[in-house]
Image (tube, rainbow, N blue to C red; front, side, top):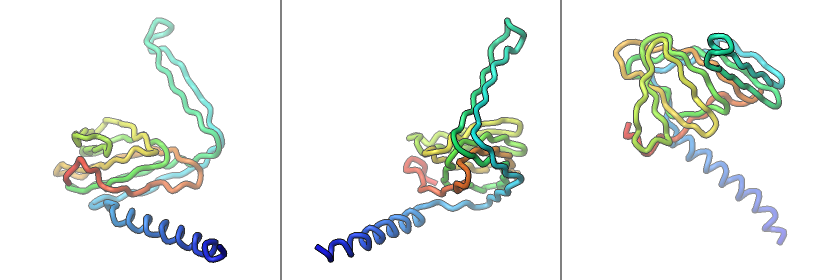
Length: 171
C-alpha cells in the first residue's frame, strides 16, 4: 500500500509531462509573423453598458456590454505578416478586437469542417472570441499585412497558447 502512495504522484507527473511534450510537438509555430506589445494595462472589475440611438430616439439602437469579475489585463498588440506569413494555430484566454491596418489577412477557424477562409482587408475589423476558439491568420497576399489587436484577458494570464493544426485544413 505504501508503494502505491509513492508511485502514484510520480506516475501522474510523468503522464502530465508527456502530454505537455506531445502538445508542444503538435503545435504549429508562426512563420513570417511578428507580434509586438504596444501597451498593457491592468483593470479591476469592469461593468459598463451603453445604449445609444443612432438618430435620436427614433434611430436604430446600438448596445454594448462589457463585464468582468476580477482583475484583467488589456493588451494593445501590433502584428505584422510578411507575404506568405502565418500566425500558426493558436488561441487566447480572452477575446480580441482586431483591425487590419495594411494589406489583408485570411482567417481560418479550427472548428470549421470546410476550412473556409475569411479575408479581412485594410480598414476592416473582426472579433476573435478567445477561450477554446482556435484560429490561424495568414497573409496570402503579395504585400505586408498589419493589424492592431486589443485583447482582454485575465490578469497575469499567458496571452497566447499555440495549438495543434486543424484536421480540416491541409496546410
